[in-house]
Amino acid sequence: MKNFLCILLIAAACLITGCSSAGERGQLIQSGKYFSVSEGTPPSDVHYKIYDESGNVVLSESTDRPLSITMADESTVDISEGMGSGLTRHVYYDTENNLFSDVFYYVVCTSDDLVAYIGSSQNDSSQNSTLIVRDIFEKEDFYKEFHPDFSETSLYDLSAVEGAFSKDQSSLNITYASEERQTSVSQSFELK
Image (cartoon, rainbow, N blue to C red):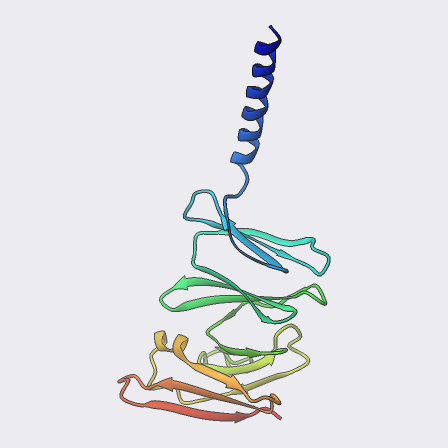
């Protein structure tokens, strides 16, 4: 009788453990100090968590889109989600100040506290191919617009605009292909 009761208790414990873990996320795919990514439910999904300096969860979401989480610098998490047709959605998290950024599309590059991206002009919303450089978290701290001639570049190709800030963040250099992809265009913009 004791053996039967022991087996029954073990089976019940296994059943309870199995049921409780079925609702949890699957195998860990990627992790860092400030984030973790694991298999979701269904398996085509991924589940990710973002952590603050103390290890507390500040964001927990699932997605079925291509996901990349990287560190833009030692305290800024870049949450990058593919939206299709070359479009990527970026949200940044500042672990030191516990701040999330606005959502950015067509990000060209980041450096320390700056992000360069292609978007609509703040002054003229009809200019939707404006190169914007701003502070990632506080738009009021730094914001500049530039108007490169992207007329020979299709909207799809705007996702292929590449760039880099100078070491002292005084300028931004970008490179992109013309519509015919016959030539590469490079431009430099002074930030200070």
